[in-house]
Amino acid sequence: MANDEMAWKHFELGNSYLSECNAQAIVELTKSLEYKHSDPYVIMATYGSLGYAYQFHKEYDKAIPWFTNYIGLLIKTNLKDDLVKAVTERGKCRFLTSDLDNSISDFELALQGEPTNQAIMELLNTAKKQRDARCHNNEISRKHFNLGSECFMEGDNATAIVEFNKAIDCEPTDQNLVFAIYGLLGSAYKYTGEYDKALIYLTKAIEINPQANVIMERGRVYIGKGDFSKSIEDFETVLRMDSTNSEVRELLAETYFQRGNTYSLNGQHDQSIADFDKTIELDPGHARAYVFRGLAYGYKGFLNRTIADLEYSLKLNPNVELANLAWEKLDEAVG
Image (cartoon, rainbow, N blue to C red; front, side, top):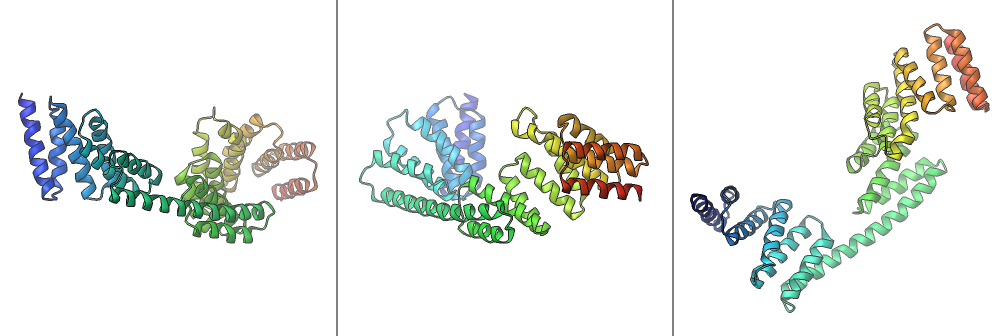
């Protein structure tokens, strides 16, 4: 009984504050729940009051789960008017947090209880119009993204950048699309040498979805900027990822190679050799790993190992570009 008395005391005080639009209502109502009143109707009412309190103070993300708890219990009662109102208010909160699909579902559910309610009909129509507008924006944005992707694949990074920026200007709401735009835009800026812009968009992509390949790409950009500590940090992030994930597993050899290259550029040749060893262990056909390991051996004075690695790299891949790189690196090592 003592708990019930305390729960009721805080419940009444909270609702008193709520009627005054006082933020203290949230504190008191939360305390009421801590005492776990034995009457489920009191708990149900407290959920509702918390939803309304958070909504009034424009904390819509916090209001939604309390309304959901409240609605779940209301459905088990015959309080039709309260249910319609609660579902409508949750729909408003979802609308204001840009969750248009769920807000539409809420308004449609509310109309099942009050089919002729004009105010709810207007809310539903507004939500549908905004959703349709966003779908149109996503469609136009995707067209620019596809054009940009074609240019990017053809090596026309300047045009790709223009198209990707047009895609962003459409303000798409499809987060998968936004992620893809940011990722490729960052890569395009990398190829044009605009590393600061590349970092901005690759970081935005990572904030949406920290995929291994995008983190790898940002690590490469840090190499371009000469910020070796941050590039190593990104490569190590990938190496700590779950290697049972196929995407991560496919990137392991290249990640060790990129970290090894970074160590080499930073003069840490023992660490770079260890990473090139790991690259070759994971991918014995990785010709560039032999080239760069050979160079690292050269810097350490092991020219026989340098020559052996460079020659073997050309057996793996005897193309002219790699051959020129190999002997250029040999000249660096001997010189």
